[in-house]
Amino acid sequence: ATQSILKQHLRTHTGEKPYACDFCDFTAAKQSNLKEHMRTHTAEKPYACHICDYRSSTSGVLKVHLRTHTGEKPYACDSCDFRANRLNTLKRHLLTHTHEMPEVEVVLTEQEPQHTGSPRT
Image (cartoon, rainbow, N blue to C red; front, side, top):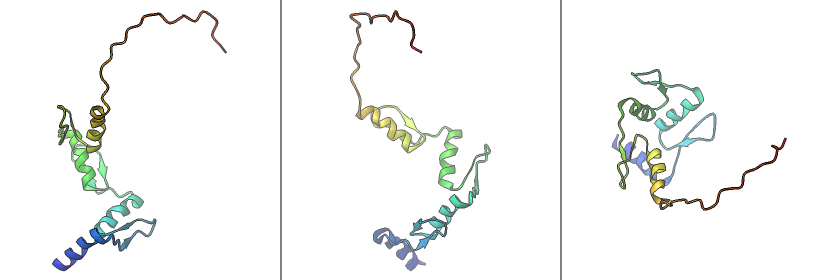
């Protein structure tokens, strides 16, 4: 058992992916990853939410879905109090800090001329 675990781990370094999908060009280092991938072709969704009708093809996606019910927000911004239930949501939020613009007060000195003609058709 230890030998097969080591062999499987070494694939992360060698890039070897001996498990191939029969339906597309997907390959995987682990048989379990191929099995999970196959659900994209079969539409099998064995993981069910116990609160609503949501179903998922992977346990990880179901875990993220459950946060919509629990309110759990495990991803925290280091710059402010923002928290997110998904990593991508936090990453999108972080852009608000890296692309921050200083607040500028806009003062209109002249009024825009009013259009007095007939609308174009």
